[in-house]
Length: 189
View (cartoon, rainbow, N blue to C red):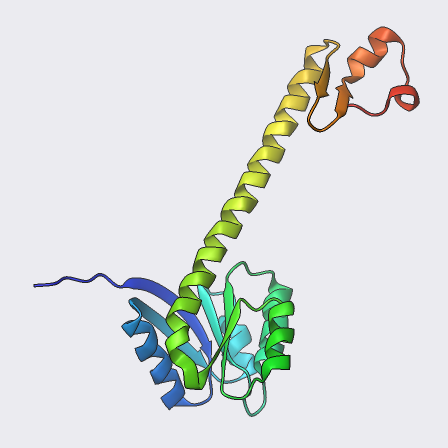
């Protein structure tokens, strides 16, 4: 007996055709996902759902009163750090490139839905990597802040020469000890 575990995935899907929505669900299930999908068709419904903790947004490019590019703009305005993929039968290459440049993770043509699983996997992996880089940058910034606070609080005159970066840093106390002004030596730490 073979046991398979499917990856759970919370998806907001902007789609006006129930058959296309079901085809997307089946494609994702076949790709190894256990999707929890909420399908919306209007701008109002999309906005009402947008901040509900989704891991992925799939958006049809063309709907009767709303489209995927408008959805992408609203998504970017919220500053959400999740993946956004356009799924369309009518997007065209020029519009697809514009969507990617505007912040979409990818696009998949409806007649090539076999690409959806790999596109979702890649987009989710990129989201994890982007969040890890952001967390590392924030941790580094906090660490540098604590280091600067400790250095200035110690009251010692300290300098540091970063040879690879060709920079020299001087603490405020070092400048005071040796009689240099900010203008003469720079701001240091």
